View 1 (tube, rainbow, N blue to C red):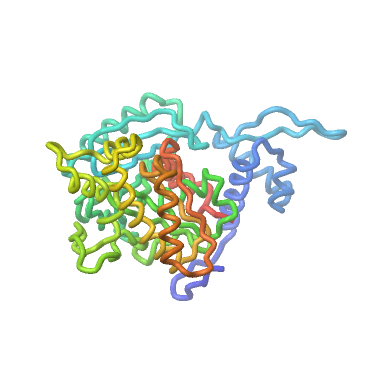
View 2 (view 1 turned 180 degrees about the vertical axis):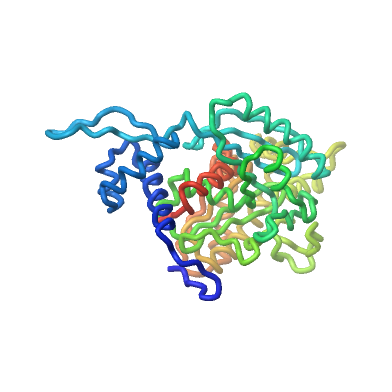
Length: 393
């Protein structure tokens, strides 16, 4: 139960109740479709008249459509309700240091269109290159009503200023991404850290979190990110920058990180770290990519396997810290590294078991890279503005 802040609160009004009831009905339709009005009333506990008013409003706004008639032994046959997947579009943007992916999805998180562009080093130039792509994508599917834009970032966004304030691997300092996108498109923009977005993706579209009250999403890419869901709540901290476990020290006086610290977890467990392990042990004319190292490891190359194994060990070192300190029900691992899970999974699990001697029953599971969890998280960012904050209950 959340504690009420008696220095900063708003009293609930009748409009608040209507807003909550609308979200309840929308979520029930989403999770139980096709569903009748009578079943909505039974599931929600709301009066049938209240459900009728809300559903008529949702139909008028084209959030919901009526489908086939149901069959009952006697009485009036019910009309089944569905979310209107043909009406709503949501734009998702996943920004990574090398490339950015844009996608247009429907209410179920199914991607209708998708494209990529290089991520410019200069953020202002990036915006100039991104906006025409956004407009073109939505213009091509003008039959859809676009409800918003979700953006996944390799860094943290200040909850007050809504500016990107901490992104060492992107190297954008105190940058306002939200305002220019909103001004150019006329759409509301929701920004979120990539790991938080992945946690939201699991809550909204996954199945492993159904029995999980506490989960941690660990994104493994150029850096390491963690998204925390504790006691059914996404943890952002008072300023929105909570969860930067990738920049906690795991090696005292270790390698200098771009954040200014030394020995950060991501310096030893990220994709970049694996490339460094491989290149350091086997000098080449050109620096290999992480995909190259993965491919070679999959082919049985000894040096590549050693690099991946070292990376997996340090992933386990950091996850042991998460298990010991937070005891989550579930740790989700997101990233290309999961393609070699048969090799890295046991190393991670054994390292966690050796270093975390608690009684936590934490499951560590990989996500499928082809499911695009970062992009799905950007869709969830917009959905929760209409359906309410997610719950893992």
